[in-house]
Image 1: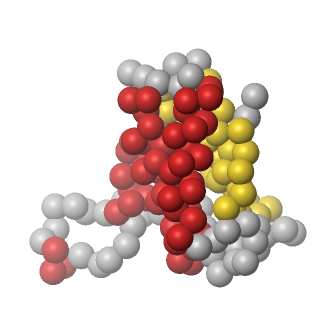
Image 2 (image 1 turned 90 degrees about the vertical axis):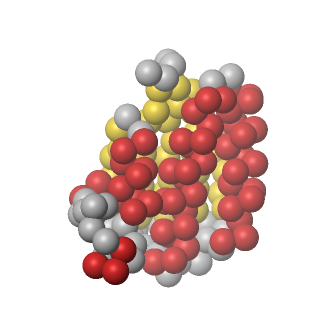
Length: 136
């Protein structure tokens, strides 16, 4: 069974998002050691929708238990196509003054999860990001 909740595309919804994730982990019996990964990835994806999505539509978050971990999905309507799985990798060895801002959160998210998938539907301008994480 999947737990789903809609959040307004505003930064002040982050506290509710984190509370939803904690409650979902508790209700589904998901190992709490994975909660930090879920919170980090969902916060990164959600804040990107808020910053760059330019939508008034609610952002839907789904969370479900899978064997040994969880699967989460974030869906946003009315947004531009931006494939988070194809965002360029950053050279973290460059000195700070040679780096451009942005992209580090997505890079860390991709490194923290086991898998991440992206789907975009042009007709609805719907972005859907699904990621999974299990215990090692």
